[in-house]
Length: 208
Image (cartoon, rainbow, N blue to C red; front, side, top):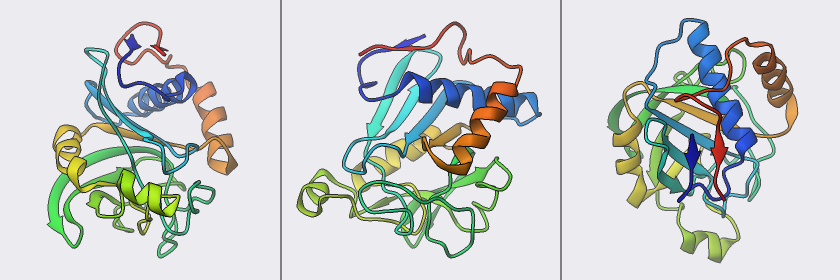
């Protein structure tokens, strides 16, 4: 499976980890859709589009978007992550999308955290995907970073609804960072998981 147009900046290593995380979750009995996968690479700066929505069946990139992190997680770079109430920090790991609602941040998508100790309090913390005025190339240029959420993966107001309507209802979202306790645990647990990183079938490559 090769992703060409729109896959710029998507690390093959991060994509492989995301596919392994989904495979391992399914091996544990977690249900979810196989056709789509959303990857967020928080090792990249907020000024860089770092969210990809992938069509695994067709090998296509459906969206490549800016996404903000929590105010407690860092400035332009995300450096601190949490599963704790009121931390205003972003959580890492594998999530499954649920339903939508209209809330204080407009049209929003509920996220269910699937990694115990790292994101399993997402619903309790009201960690959702939503649009925000402070997510835009203009804001990034003027401030040197995007604005920041209270821990939610916030998208631009223009992209939020189409992205949410595409991935809602049981698709997987993988949020990555290349450092810290989560990375160490994820690396060891995914390596120990017997399921290979096949995703839609076959080896995974990202065309440059």
